[in-house]
Figure 1: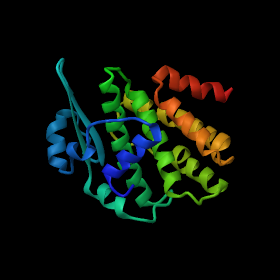
Figure 2: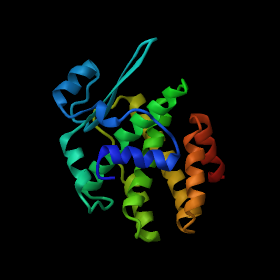
Figure 3: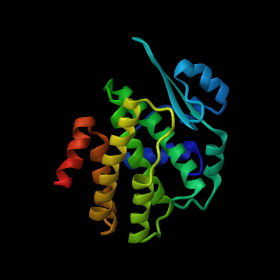
Figure 4: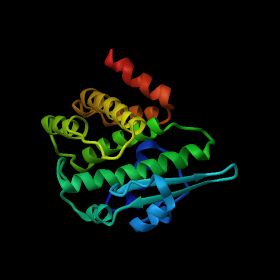
Length: 216
């Protein structure tokens, strides 16, 4: 996972999906260009943005990633809680958004912004777990705490955006702890893969339902 293209291929293998587009063909790193494309809705400090323009005939996508996000992909020491881990998560989020949207569009299936954010949060967790394969139970618990408990949200979000991110963080945190308890601790890689692929194919209602059932 040392480049965006490799990260895309890895996520496609995890979820057993095919997308004919290469994320690198949609990436820009020029912040001024990203602002111009986003217009009045631009948030200047955001290091990752998936910009969309939809018409009855097509869906146009552009993925903005800050240059420092791309630089960190060559780093071989990405531990949870570090600046490198934060940048890695931003890269995962961008690729996750791109891939999920492109895959769903290929089936002409609608999706919500909440399920897009929820899936990206889960992809961050499994990405960091994959990079740190030799970490133990306590380290995975620390990773969940860093990702989902000690989270901060970007300044400038309106109430609706902030609520969406908070809900996605809450449910992703519950789900990733379920994955850790049910599969990672038991070293059940096959079970984990089946679970992740099933979850990925659900819409918002199905995703939240799967999480809530395990919450009791």
